[in-house]
Length: 527
Image: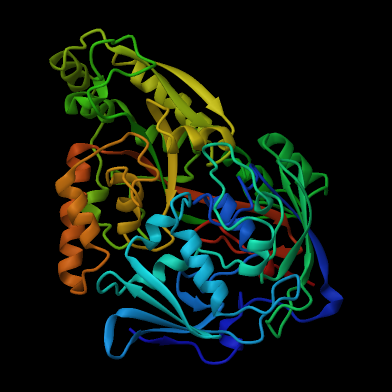
């Protein structure tokens, strides 16, 4: 269980940082949506984390191959005489952007803040009992039981300055769902390679190089201009006109055209993210349906009928232009617990689907509203539009409600939607991350994104056991058992694993990141 990275060179933010001051550049980086907040423990959301990684740092991180690497922690190992305690040796000589020294008390404060009630990151730390500073550069994390995979949960838990947080009254995490605001929502003080210079939410944010960053080699990119551009055509036009240098969210319909455009190149690769639909469970009638005495989704025959009506292959071919990998399980192939058997999905069978609806008491179907984001995932609104048509073929009449992700995400976390599209990445590369957030009963540290309020106490017990099970074979067997129930119950309705495309000037190289969290520190400029 020991993972010690020797030397600063092996722990750089990215192995592709360039040294030459002559190649220093401003990068204008466009994508479809903005970070939801700058409070680093408020939202467990990919775009938000991606932006924050440039300003704040974590104890450990992953490289583009998905391997854990040192960041603010140089080493992490289980205590020799106590297998329930992780010991983190911290990097010395690190300072926050305001010049304050980074010490163990900042780690204790940040981990405690991240596992507090308002934090959307708390499920990652559900098995933590106590965090203690042994000295200025050693932290012990006492778990409730053996937790051999805990370091995997730390890749998006950012470290804040305790003193700065106290001085600016941000000891408590922003309650995003309640619409709360705090100083940390628009102001930052991290240890990362860039400082926040200015921010206009949903318009433009500017980051400048942190000259005092601990890494010996400095990135070639000295300024980042971050530009959320919701409209796909406008993003592409900005790249073609030279107004932006990198477009992270390339519309699938433009990939071939951009690939053949002089001065532009495309980088593609699979993402560690599944796109799925969720629906409301429970006896209470749906708010958006014409069925007023029951919840159609609570009937397993209805959920099966919906799956049989959705043509994943057609979505791949027509909507995604081949840029997706259809799946039958809400777990990407990168993740421990994935199997080919789970990945299989049924062929479309409209006759069987209609018969199942009739058996469930809905021979003429029913109505419902589908909530979808329109600027978060690749062709998210178009996927939802396609599903509206497919469900209509069996009598389920769906009204589409499309919103930016900043308005869509709170509907899911507040359980205010009957039927919704969401994407889920798995930064821990382990199925427990899916179960903790999407499957476990919404209760305390668990179920933050269980938008449908699915509840299975027997399954909950198995899910919680994964955090403390040390026998990896036994743990994997439990994961398989959980997935079998999740798939049979159709707790989630997975569509495909997302495939990514980044477009950029051909003078730039930026590899596709499996978690769609590329760092501008990894940009190379080609001579």
